[in-house]
Image (cartoon, rainbow, N blue to C red; front, side):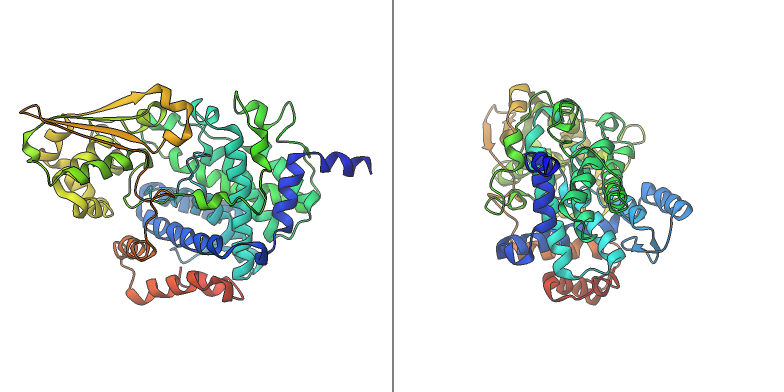
Length: 465
């Protein structure tokens, strides 16, 4: 009785109970629909990444260390152990930077949630409803934990997709393993022990950027598998004086952990991208796209864009072709993307789905000359407010000293300005046509995902992948 009372008083146990007892019937229809399109979003971003060098290295690695053939490497004709599939799919799914974003927790939640969910759904022969319920539970657990430690956690240098999303992956895996609330609590406790990931990769654009997402996906599954066997962890891991909230953020907001279960669905605050570039720069891209018909681009003298400082540090790169950055130079340079948007408009931005075309733009003298005129201003005071993380203030000065100024509080694809579902389908097809998928294969995946509640075994959809 004493143990039960202690558990009931911990937010860790409350989160675990929510994840393990959530019923599909309890989830609003709009949340189910949102989750389906986030899955489609993830799959569209995942498959093209298979062609990049980091994916090839991981492919060789997981084939060396794998256990039984349980779960698919998406887009590849092979199965490996579930946790290794999650590692591969989680890392490769983040490669082309088209995955979703939840600004309040500063996480790319989808790539980690769906990588662990699909791997474990295959392993357990789950139905579509079971997959959706587990994934939505994982989103809610992870995003609430993120809200409880941000913005300090992110500003200090942690990569939330490597830290916070470990909890989401653990919740997903525990749910699909049908663990009870206590064992799910231990799975979350194990996740807290394994959280890791920082942003040191940013200056060199190296492969650890994407590995963060794969590592958290794998670690969460490992935590749940250990809990299934009876391995124990702290049942108050989140609020413990030596636990996650106290160690990973100077300021914590523990009330966010359990506020409004089944009334507040944080997954609905998840945004999506239309272009393959770091989300921090998307509002700036939107702003200059609105301007480009109003003046002669060749008459621009200077462009400035004000962004929150921690994000600006990531994407402030006026020489994206230098060193060995490769395609990551294009995806993480605000100057490059602003220049392409101004010179070539929306069609130019759609071209960036193709890495070959993106690198061709990088070599164009006209693009490089415009990049020299673009300055990113780091606004330190915006770091304190995650609602500012999608904002920008863009000013364009022409050589006759005419000014064009635009302030945006969010970007196209954010929850207050969502990408219409038909355009999300177009985005999905644009991504997969680049790697040679046929129309019938794409339609098979689209139809399967959008009718997921009718799928008795997830392997039916995995066959298309």
